[in-house]
Length: 122
Image 1 (spheres, rainbow, N blue to C red):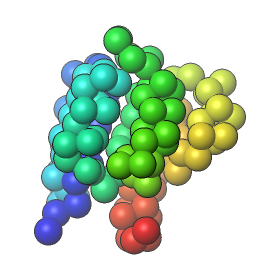
Image 2 (cartoon, rainbow, N blue to C red):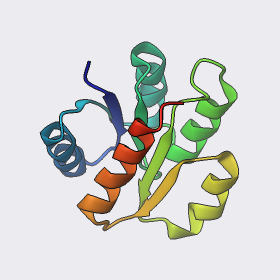
Image 3 (cartoon, rainbow, N blue to C red):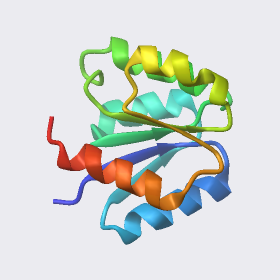
């Protein structure tokens, strides 16, 4: 069974890039354009990992991550933050995110992090 990845990102170009890279590695990829939709899809799909932007409309990535970590049904889903906001790293680390990448990032580093998370069955 293919591993499910949820990409929560408001920039269509970035969604397309991540989706193409991840699908080429055999993952099933879903997307959400903001934190509200991201939480709904996380609860509905129970993805194996979530890639999360920070600056998004309606609900930002930090608030989404907080809500996911506080909810028993989503708290164990690994989170990978992908953002231009390097200053947010300590806050996300405190929340317990698995990886933090600053845009622009190296594709292989991100794909390698996802692979590590998914091979480390929790």
